[in-house]
Length: 313
Image: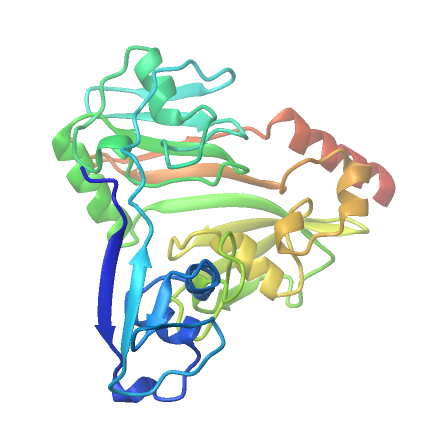
């Protein structure tokens, strides 16, 4: 695979007349406005042959020349044990794991920590070869900062069937989250599109042009400063629960990326968001029987609940 930068020359559509360079590039190339601005700041963008900054305006029919960054080097799966990763279920078709916090589902550019796929390889598990090389067998993911249940396909038929179930939204994915304050209503649905944050590459947000996203929540237990919620996802967008709760003005406790109160997180001893995948149910690919799996709270989340209950007594 070539690692040389790629030069692109693009005609500006009439519909983008008057747009800023960064906004036009983001629309034309399908990446974030932040990335487009970075390319302009680095002198990688020219308009009709002249170097331009991010805030200059384009005209319909003009030409943008962009020096795209070199593609990342291929990502390898490293077989490395994952301390604390539990095997909840294992058969010929799939394995259900209890992922600890701080572990990625699969390798990605820039990630140097352990992964579920690497942990399974180190333990001698063979997974399906379907999917990209670095994420073979992975049919869904959890954030690095979120713990709990994941299913990984071992057979090709299981991979195909589980992907279909996730795509058709027949999988029962349940999470528990501790949200700041008390949502109103105490049980409800958040239906708001989720997409890339307009200015921060590492975040997601409720944005008009985002993908359809629906989160159902029910109150499990109320504390003085927060609420324990049972959450069912109808869709599976990146950071969906975190984004929806934050947009609802009740971010996950400890989720500093999405506006949580750092003082409360310190008081509870949390160094990550209080979010755990507690239950996973689906039709087994081998025979269609419904199977369900559950996961207990990790120690750090359990301790935070104890403190909340003591403060509310």
